[in-house]
Image 1 (tube, rainbow, N blue to C red):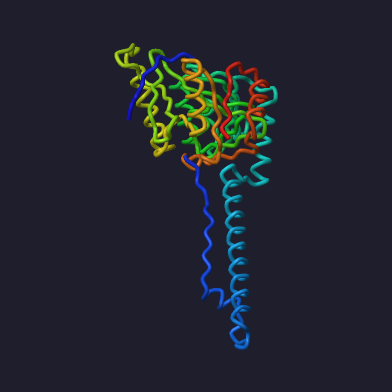
Image 2: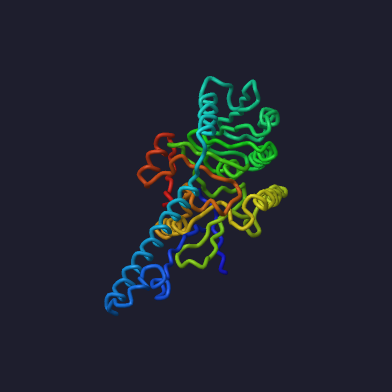
Length: 318
């Protein structure tokens, strides 16, 4: 596998297949009239063909219904009771609460709003009730601190709720932190390649032609910041071992990889953009992801990005 290092500048879905097999014996058993011995051979053949077509149509219709159900399940189905809990949590965290962190008096809801800094006080999350709700809105964050928050959320078995947006390291770690994540309508979750100081972007060939994978990694012979980058690499590997053991993070669908490669070819520079990740691929991670309404087009994603004042582009994952 060829690898190309570039200085930093800026899935697998499942599909149900409908298969219908109708035999002459099956048709004779269910559709033919064995007592009508006087029927002509031609009439029997017509009956057999009619039954075969009907059975095939039924099988395909059933399979399509199952496929539709699977798609809905991948995007998330939640109970009315949970919807009410999530709405209550969002309303509380959107009210006049302390920032960047707040904990409701009953300790069932914790809020975070802002950049995840190095010296962030995590006592509110530590005091969150087990099974509580964590509402997050964040553009970016320190990798080590964000992983600490994510590990606390998993320990608390907290449900993560996205308030308006969860980008970069918020998407990398908080989005997949615990057992359940809920993304309400009009909220934006988007990834981008983040590198610590001294990291580069590595481009690796994949089995899909024209769709290489883009990753951030340590530069060969580069500045190592007294071992910080090596430590972060270890933290990342440990973090994803349990949460996405068979999947490369950050997530990149084939469509996203092709879009990134297209921009690289057009400009000669690593694209400084974000991208979304269609929830139909979320079976690759252990977090159950519930989207109230995943965006349906690039225009919708552009509108969400404009609403929050995001300058960098966001590529839509169809």
